[in-house]
Image (cartoon, rainbow, N blue to C red; front, side, top):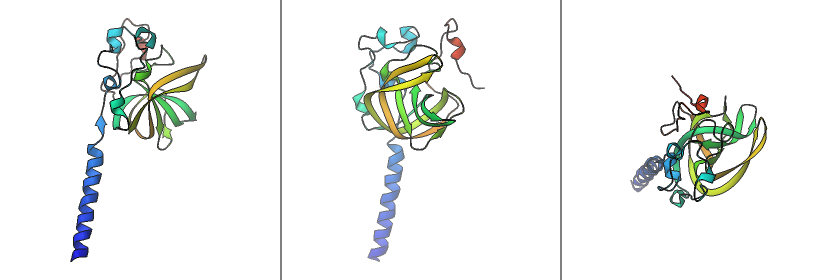
Amino acid sequence: MNHLKSIIALAAALALSTAGASAETAHIFWKDLRPATQAVAEDAGLPMIAAKLPDHGETLSVALQDETIQLAGYALPVDRDGDLVYQFLLVPWTGACSHMPTPPPNQIVLVTPARPYKMTEAYEAVSVTGAMKPDMKKSQLFILDGVSVIQSGYSVRKADVVSVDTVPDSVVLPVNSPWSFLNKKKN
């Protein structure tokens, strides 16, 4: 009888810990990665570049340290072999870093998937889930006209990555922007 009670108690504890793990994931938005006083991209006049900001976009949210987060954005491969991506930059709008100036570091997340992620195109909309670490990292991005060094303010290692249809808080470039062709619309 005591053995049965122990098994039931263990099963209940496991069920609670599993339910708690998913409940502890914070669904965050890009605004959560920057100080409240920092202008959003639309207010800063795209492209929002670090040089326009008093802190150069290097103020990070330390409240996110080791928090399990879920964030949607656009994936830009850094390390890949064919269509398998081993590391990518997660950015808040399409075209960031390669077709237009780079967002501030506190608006870029360096993501290392738990398993290589199969990506069909750059700037694929994805959702990333994993432990957030605020730390400045530099990555080399190989683009058509050379190499660019991109500084990210956050990293997520061993991330779960899934394709999504939309990014809820994506920045849409104004129609009169020279980069408006980068606006992605999925019907």
